[in-house]
Image (cartoon, rainbow, N blue to C red; front, side):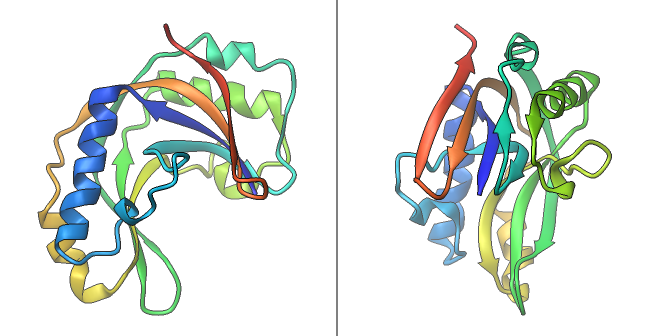
Length: 168
C-alpha cells in the first residue's frame, strides 16, 4: 500500500504524540508503541496499492502550510470487537482544495480516500476494545489547532518515506 500524507508542524506533532503516550499509559493500544522513524502523526490524503503521483504535484505542494483544526473524536471499525480511535479534522475550503489537487495528480487511490468519500483524521490508537473507548476519549484534550507543513509518500511494501515537499 502507498499513501500520500500530510505531516504537522513540530508543536502539533508533539501534542499528538502526547495523546499517544497518555493512551499507552492507560493501557490503550496507541501508536506510541510503533517506534519506527516513519511513524509520525499524519493525515492520509490518498492511498492505494497502485497509487502513483504524476509530476503535476506542485499545485498541492504550493498550498503548504495548511492550517488544521481538530474537531473531536472519530471511531472506526477495526476488526471483530476492536475499534480505531482518531482525531477528526475540520473540512475547510483550503484542505478540500489541497485534497482535490492531490487526486488530480494521483492515480490508483482507493475509493475511501477520494473526494466526496474522504474522512480526514489522525489515528491515535488501533485495536481498542469497546469498554476502553470512553476512557480513551476522556484522556484527550480535544482543543487542538496546528498546521500541516510537509507532504510525504509512504510505501508500506518497502517501508520507505519519500518527502514530496515542505514549507520552509
